[in-house]
Length: 279
Ligand SMILES: Cc1cc2nc3c(=O)[nH]c(=O)nc-3n(C[C@H](O)[C@H](O)[C@H](O)COP(=O)(O)OP(=O)(O)OC[C@H]3O[C@@H](n4cnc5c(N)ncnc54)[C@H](O)[C@@H]3O)c2cc1C
Ligand code: FES
Image (cartoon, rainbow, N blue to C red; front, top):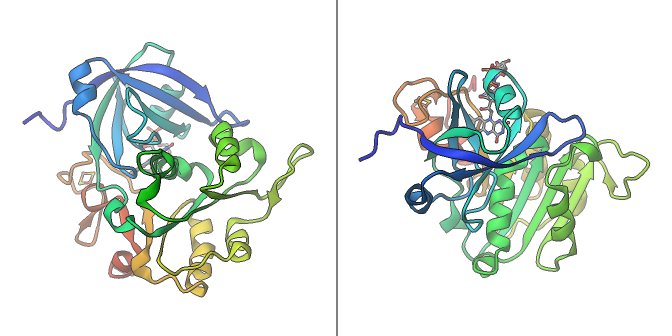
């Protein structure tokens, strides 16, 4: 068995600034060795530890879909030492990848069901993976209706703009993109995600909801899901905790008896309800 602390070598294939404030950058990474590329298989919602020599290592959700073979995408918010260094990488630079880590979204449970995806800000990364996976021709019939409500503070802060435009033209996905505050060119919706969700009022029947976003968005969206009669067992989210090893060994990320890195990062609200109250 390969040492789980050893990173797999990869190079930056492409780097793209996503947002007008230049704080979010998507890196497309290609494994250096074809055998590593072949052996790497993941499900949406999993994450990797990306490392840079002399800088360190940090966890990032995989933003590409397993159907996008040949490379992996990560969208990185400039927060501190590692993320700033990742923002300055040139194409062709070597990066280490440990993963895939964590559990990912419960894809088997979603089979034959409707899926409601609710995202805010840059937490949309693994939701992009999930949506792109289900929209792939090989997988579209795995789930029934796909509804997506995605919001950002301003139009310039929306991620994956070209893709959003493409998804918006499709008849097999209901996409609602909203911003807290528009600008002179914005012709789309203006409103906060929880209110837009309430207005869209998707049915909870036979439906799983997946929600990722800033804590304040989640706090105000959750009661809307309750009002729409989504049971806790059918609401999933992905938690972000400080992590080190990413494989359940160092005890850095635990909440009660759960390790976010190994038992999560994806949890249902039914699971979260049982965690210590101070979380
Ligand atoms: C499972 C998982 C998936 C993630 N996915 C993404 C992703 O797709 N894109 C992305 O941009 N980020 C993601 N993050 C967050 C990312 O890992 C942190 O921003 C990163 O570790 C910061 O590293 P740094 O060295 O740049 O910051 P540091 O120099 O270590 O810290 C800079 C600042 O960020 C804060 N910080 C550091 N780590 C975290 C954290 N985990 N949560 C909250 N605050 C933190 C510190 O307190 C400090 O204020 C994810 C985190 C987890 C656990
Ligand atoms: S990060 Fe080490 S146990 Fe989770």
